[in-house]
Length: 180
Image (cartoon, rainbow, N blue to C red; front, top):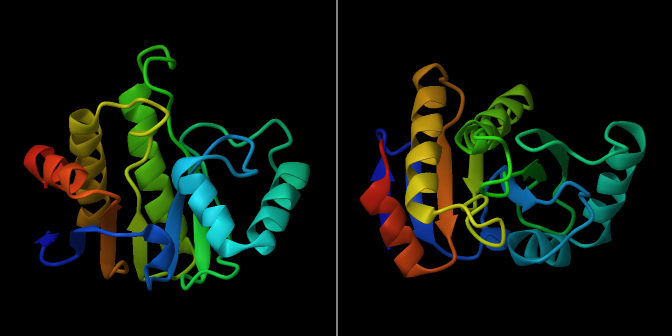
């Protein structure tokens, strides 16, 4: 299942994000940057120790209290096909004084901005915050698609953004609720 949007610059697909052949994949990280469950655990497991070592250094030098929600940092891709990993912390739904939507949009916008800053052309995203962080999938589809559309309206550098879903029903739900 693949579906394209915005003149083929955005592709929705089902797959394993750790196997995407892109310049960078986005990690739905937790604030510790030290690995976890879901996408975060899969990326750390597939990417190997180099990613963890670089995350530890970021924690030591830049974010000793943890990466704030909505912010993004970059590491190498370690053993992944992707050259880089962009780590972002999505909002835990209902725990941000009404700023959940803004923080989720920031995950996407800030990841795209950091990709452009690093001259990356292709990037793959998971569905940020919709797993253990409890963000409703229909709302996340609307927010993420609007954030991506808004960013791409002012950017010529990014060639392809892949939205990679773990299951067909999640991809279909995204397509139904997206706002491209």
